[in-house]
Length: 165
Image (cartoon, rainbow, N blue to C red; front, side, top):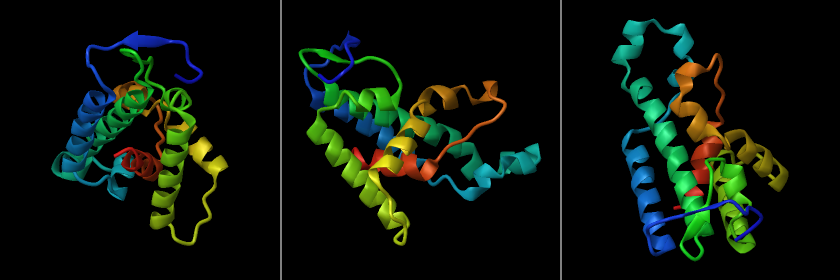
């Protein structure tokens, strides 16, 4: 395993079993639909408007499920001798993935970003900055009601998670 010495035992016998669990959360997030621009305009809506808007109702669970699926998928890549990397921080788990797999994920994410923004030159430094920015999404967004402000690069979360499946 990579740099992290903190591991936890797991009851599954293979990384494939862990990936299957991650994929279930990923597929569930896809069922919830898209996270559109209207979600980010939520502070300008009254409660009645929010209650009627299905995209807003589904956005939060979709974000949490997407982040959880990324965490579990990354942990599957750290599986070794019945243990996986501990914690919820996506960046910290990512750096513990074997270098070859990290590069595959990075390249695929960069390609996914390029598809979204064909005229944009996206580089490895931006990838690292963006990954750091979404590293705590699972923890932060499941308790969003405790935050004064929230920020999320959903396009990057989406591109990164899609690269894992």
